[in-house]
Length: 183
Image (cartoon, rainbow, N blue to C red):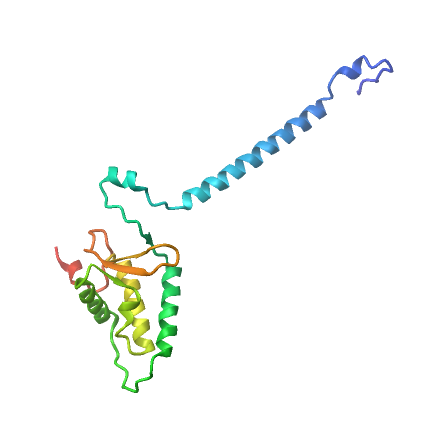
């Protein structure tokens, strides 16, 4: 039974247990919201890949590369620019030469072997038509997947440079690759 309240307020000095419970629930909600915010920030931070600064690279013994690695969207944007400039070239009416992606990869690797690095757009210079541009772009994407090349950009909107590199041991092999049959 509830206690009768007195007019003098002697028992009114005691704290209502419901008020204490509400206060603790509100405090719990604040901590829960803060924990959720910290968790979101931690997830965002974990999703970021930062290039180590020069001191870390020097300690690790790796050569520091001041250029940024290129993401797929930058490659697509650069390819769109190549296609737009190709539209402005004079049209040559020659029978289209069908080239396989494997052949184009070999051609690009040969070209990259002649120099330390090559500009992204320079790799499309000998592509005569739209299908050759697309095969070249797909060949570059496949070469990135196979870890045959590295693609870097100096700054957010700088030119894209392509570097040839030896295939690492953990690199994936294409289907029918003669290196997968060695043992």
